[in-house]
Image (cartoon, rainbow, N blue to C red; front, side):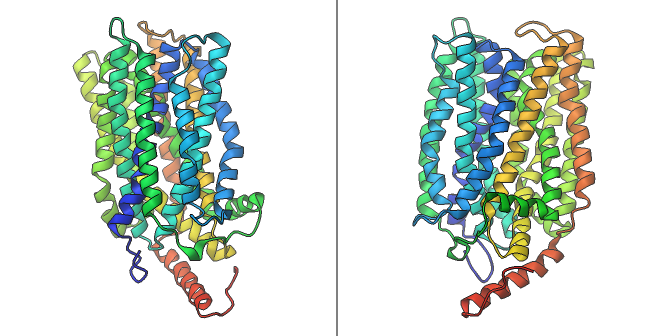
Amino acid sequence: MNKRTGRVSWSTTLAFGAPAIGAGYMYLILSLYVMKFSTDVLLIAPAVMGAIFSLSRIWDAISDPLAGYLSDRTTFRLGRRRTWILSSCVPISIGFYAVFAPPFSMQGSELTLWMTIAIIGFYSAMTLFFVPHMALGAELSTDYHERSRLFGVRHIFFTLGSILSLGAMYLLINEEFTEGGNVRLLARDLAFIAIGVMAVLVIYAVVYLRERPEFQNRQQGGPLQAFRDIWGNPHARLLITVTFIENVGSAAIAALTLYISQYVVGAPAMAPLIILAYMVPSSLFVPIWIPLSKRFGKIKVWMGGMILTGLSFGGMFFLPYIESLEQRLFWIIFLAAFAGLANGCGGTLGPSVQGDVIDYDEYKTGERKEGSYFAAWNFVYKSALGVMLLLTGFVLDFAGFVPNVEQTMQVKMAMVSLYGLFPLVCYTIGAILFSRFTLDEKAYQVIRTELDARRAENENGKPATTGL
């Protein structure tokens, strides 16, 4: 990094973003396909799968804070972030493979137990990667807008991995509707390939990235104190609330797109195309959000992105009332494109704003605990998805959902209410709450000036301020 300008080199930016390809692939295919894989292929009840995801969120309340705290306190020679990023490879591989390769002989409660352990194990392992990786991104630059560029590139890589997962889902869906097809065997083979790619990208990042020595071993308290500091940070508290509401809304696409495309639109094979229409604008429009945020401010631009996303999802509610298959396809692809465009805003600016909030914590406490902060946001993200999957499972059961048959209008309306109206409400509330966020560029520059002065005092051998 150029210490004078805060600019991060492109070689460092690419090394930081590269592992997000593997993470994006694994996260999306697990979020989008594992529910349908479990209900339609493994024949596990939707409510049971919803309960499994809910249970994994309960475990996250323990594993996420622990991962963040350990990452902040690690003092190994490799660094407090890269050590955990590298160590995550083996458990990620085991967990991801187990989700998509349960033994063919397993059935009933035995299969349910296997999937419970596999899903919880995978998400726990991804926490070991995701939290230190995002924390490292916040450390690579302290510039207000450079962080947006850094996380914007990461978002592009994450989206690229997500797009690759769509190709895998396309193959799996076709296999499901092919006479004599073996979905479970194909899912196992694709999981093995993904594991290899993820391992290579993680090793590449660990070899080429470097950590800032002045940020090492700067957390003094225990994990409970760290999270008391987070909740006591007014900017973090508001952002956590907004992030949860926003991600509950966005989790609709992960939980229900395959169901909507098959049972409402009537074109199950088009599901990857629908998601692709969401993913491509999410990545392509990243370069637009960055200059817009410089001109109008990250807060206002992100609020606008939330509103556009909510309206785009809200339009999905009318899908059951469109008679023509071609018109339904056009409508859902058109709206998915606008939702994806707006999603790129949150994916770019959200982590950048989180980095600013972490600097505010250093301003108040004199500590650096990026791991604990990103653990909190990671828990919020996964909790939102868990809530949506739990809600989806119980709503579908209550509405009378029966897999692989034509659904009643009651079931279709339940689906589009969760897929359209619910996200609209969530994003609207999120935008209203976020309008109260006050850590804008002007306020941040005051904090940055003070932190830079403290750092200069430390380098000159003078006592450093430990807080205000």
